[in-house]
Amino acid sequence: MPATRSRGLCLVICCAAVGIAGAAQPKPQPVGKLDESRTWDLEEGEAKSLDLEGQPVTQTLTVKFASAGCPVSVYIFRDADAKGDDALLDADPKKALAGATATVGMIKADVPEKTATRVIFRGATVKTAVKVRLSNQLAADSKDATIKKLEDEIAALKKELADLKKRSGKK
Image (tube, rainbow, N blue to C red):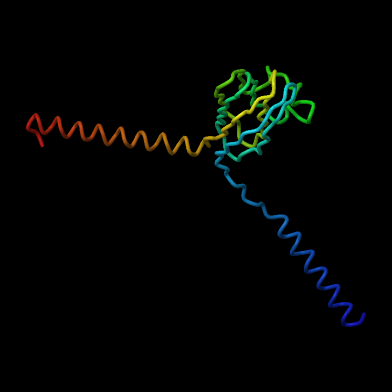
C-alpha cells in the first residue's frame, strides 16, 4: 500500500475512534430554570402549546395566564398524554396534571424528573389575546429554600434564648 493511502486510512480510523469515544461519553444535562412570558392571539376553536423538555430533577411548573376577550382552558399534560397536533384540541383533560378554565388564573403541577410536558391553551369562544407567564421551581431549589428557612428559624430561636437568659440574669 502506498504511504499516502495508508496515512489517509490511518487518519480516517483515528477520526472515527475519536468520534466514537466522544459519543460514548454522557453529556451533562442542563438543569433549566424557567421564567418565560409571552402573549399571543388565540382564535375561536384554536389551540396552542408550549412544549417543555424533561428536567433531570423533579420540578413544580407554574402557569399564570390572563385572557382579554373570554375564558380559556389551560392544561399541563405529560407529553406522552398529549402527543401530536390532534392532541392540542382532543387531549383528555382528566389526564392533565393540572388545568383551569378562566379569564385570569394560575395552575401548578408537580412534574417527575425526566418527564417532558406540554402546556396547552384552548377553548376560546372569540378571538382573544392570551398573556402567559411560565415558571418552574426545581426540587434542588426547594431543598435549598427549606434549608435556608430552617437556618433562619434556628437563628431566631438562638436569639430568643439569648434574650431570655439575659432577662433572667443567666449567662
